[in-house]
Image (cartoon, rainbow, N blue to C red):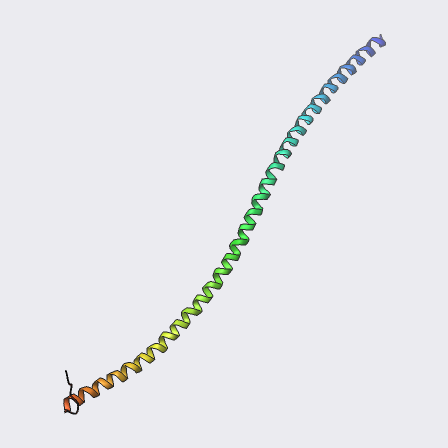
Length: 126
């Protein structure tokens, strides 16, 4: 009777071996599908990375241009502020000169009016 028992054990081992082989085949298939999916994602990323890096490069270039423009604008504002200060100084000097000129003209007019009033000057119309 022991051989019958061994046959049962061998049949069970054979069944277990077949089930293990099926299980390994399923795991291999799942790993293969997983590997294919990962490979597909990586291929998609390669295309996206080029676009992303291109856009980042363009954005960096644009940022550099804007930085340069801002520096130019800052310099322009500084120059314009200096021009405005010079204009204010010139206006103050012009105001002083105009006050002197207006004082002299006023003094001449007053002198003429006094001369006309006292009879030392007269107007002749032809």
